[in-house]
Length: 173
Image (cartoon, rainbow, N blue to C red; front, top):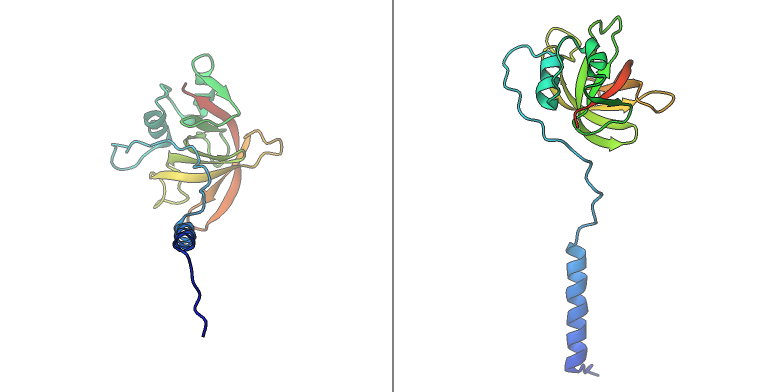
């Protein structure tokens, strides 16, 4: 029977390689960079919450009146555009379904055509209206990729609902 002889230096190398392999097995895969996010302060109001006071509180924009008036009110006071930014207010145009328009605050930028918003009073029935919805996914559904048409993820069914026409974003910076 033959016995293998190893020198102390070769044993040290084997131990070193084994240690490195053990560490490599425990190492995590590199993570993707996190999406830019905005911390949303808790809304102090109790009861039914409307989109306008909620968006004003979270964004810091000093605009009054129904959501349908915000886009015009912002002219000359705030920058407006078709590019979302953290803390910007997404302004939906009035429509038969939204006669007063709607406003929502951008809280996460996920990609060139997707983001998340926090907003209020976006329900579909008496039980779901008047509530705050945080981090709701929104996608750009416009043919020109310019955020003039958007779709929100319906939390109950897990798919994107109908399209809504949008003016764009009001930037508070």
